[in-house]
Image (cartoon, rainbow, N blue to C red; front, top):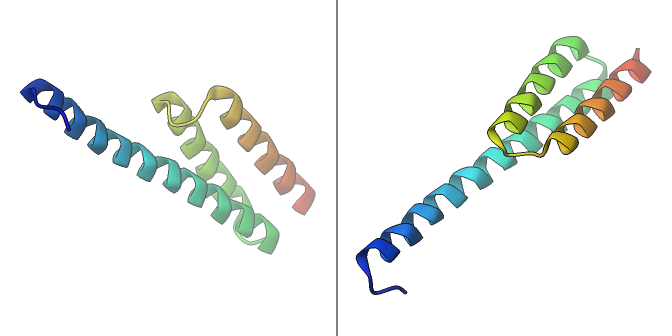
Amino acid sequence: MPNIKSAIKRVTVSEKKAAANKSKKSAIRTTIKKAKASVAEGENVQDTVRATQKAIDQAAAKGHMTKQAASRAKSKLAKAANAAK
């Protein structure tokens, strides 16, 4: 544990940010899983896919996903939705 006041603050701030980022990444993964389940069941596919793609784009814009990972996730989701039609 650091002794200097500014170093102590940096530790606490970075812990808070890490927890927030972890929560946001988990939420994105959950959204993607729900969308995949919706596609598999075949109910309300278009709205779910559209909402999930928007969430993925927002996560990429905020830096919670890389652009490539976001693009790959959106592509997989669209491919699954088109196959389900």
